[in-house]
Amino acid sequence: MPDIATPPRPTALVIGASAAGLFAAAALADYADVTIVERDALPGGPEPRRGVPQARHAHLVWSGGVLAFEDLLPGAVDDVVAKGGRLVDIMRDMVSRAPNEVWFRRFTNGYHRNLVCSRDLLDSVLRSHVFALNSITVRQDTTVLGLEGTASRVTGVRVRTGDDETTLSADLIVDASGRGSHAPRWLTTLGLPEVTEREVNAGVAYATRIYRAPGTTANTRFPLINVQANPEKAPGQGGIILPVEDNRWIVTLSGTRGGEPTSDPDAFQAFALGLGDPIIGELLEHADPLSDVATTRSTANQRRYYEKLPAWPDGFLVLGDAIAGYNPVYGHGLTVAAQCALAVRAGLHQHRITEPGTARTLQRAAAKPVAAAWDLAVGQDAFYPGASDTPPTAAERFLARFVDRAVETGASNPRALTALLDVMSLEKPATRLFSPDMLRPMLFGPRKPPLDGPPITDAERRAATT
Image (cartoon, rainbow, N blue to C red; front, side, top):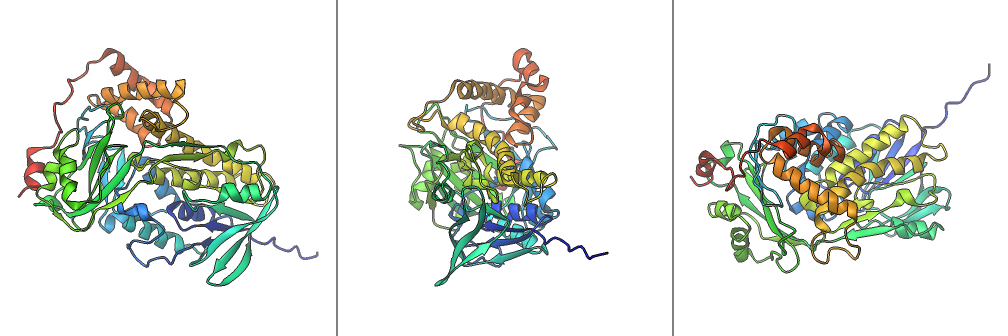
C-alpha cells in the first residue's frame, strides 16, 4: 500500500501577549502550533510592562472568569493564590455600596469566589502557564504592521523586528492587541466594509495609589471596600480598596466629568473622604502610601460589531478588548477574554481551523460573552451626561431600571443576591434575574430594611487602626 502522508499540523499566530492573547493561545494549543507575536519585551516575573498601562489600577476576576481560567489553564488560579492572591467570597468578604446607594448585607455565599491580586502577578502567572505549553512559541519585540491576503482569506501578517521587515504566514491569525487594535483599518485595506462601532463614555477618570496595609489587616481576611458611583448624581464618584499580595492595598478612586480625581497625592485621601460614604478615606488615615498617584482616562465602553459584517475572511479572528473594551469599574474585561477563548475552543471541537467558514463561526461565538458584559456596562454608563451620541434604547432603559430593583432586593435577600451575582459574574445570562429566586422577594418580600451604613465589623475596623 502506498504511504499516506500525515497532514501538516495547522498553524496559528496570535497578535499580542495580553491576557486575551494568552487565553487565545491556550485555547488553540490543542489544534495548532501557535506563535504569539508581542510588540514589547516581556518581564520575567510579576513586574509592570509598557503595554499594559491599566495594570496599575484595581483589578478583580469575577467567579465566571475564575471558572474559565481553571478550564483553560488548570492550576493557574491555585498558582496565583499560592503567590499571595486571594479567592474572596462575594459578599462575605466584601463591603459594597451599589450605584443606587444601597449597602449589601454580607451573606456567606460560598459559590461566587472572585480572584483578587495585582495585575502584574496575574499576568506573570498566566504567561508562565501558557509559555510552558509545548505547541506555543513567543516572538518578542516584534510589531505587526498589517495583514496579508484578500477580502476572502487572510494568510499572514507583515511584521517588523528592529529594522527588519518580513511576512509571517499562518492558517489562522488572531488579533488580541487590545483597545488599540488596527483590525478595522486592516480589514478595509483588504476590501471589506467598515465595521459598525459604538462608544459609550461616562467620562470616568481613575486615580490609583498603592498603600501598605495598616494595622494588623495582613493577618486577617480584610474585606474589599467598594463604594460605587451613582449615575443619577453627576458627577458620579466612587472608589475601591483592594487588598492584594505583599500586604498592600491597591486603592482606586474614580469620578465622571466635573468630578475627576487628580494625580495630586495631597488630594487623594480628601477625595476619598468626599465620596457618598467616607469609609475609604477613613481607612486610609492609618495606611502608609507606597507610590505616587497613577491616573487614566481610557475607560470608555467601546464595541466593534465584527459579527455583523456581511462577509468575513477565512483565517482571521478578533478577540478580547480588540472586540470590546469596558469601563474597568465593572471588572468584566478579563472574564470576557477568557470566555471568548473558551468559545473558540468549543468551536474548534466542531470545525477545523483550515475549513472554510470556521473563522466566521468562531467570530460569532466570541460575540456572545462580549454582548453579555456590554449590556451590563452600557446599562449603567449610558445614563451619565454626555456618555453617548445615541440615547439609551428602550431595552437598555428597562434593563437599567430592573437591575436597580434587583440590586435593592439582592442587598437584603440571599437567594436574590445569588441570582444577581450569577449575572454580574457572567456565569449565567441576564434572564436569571427573572427567575423565582429574584422575582418572589422582589414582588412579595419579606425584605429586611436597608442598612444605614457600611457593614464593616468592629474587629475589622480595629485591625485597620491598630
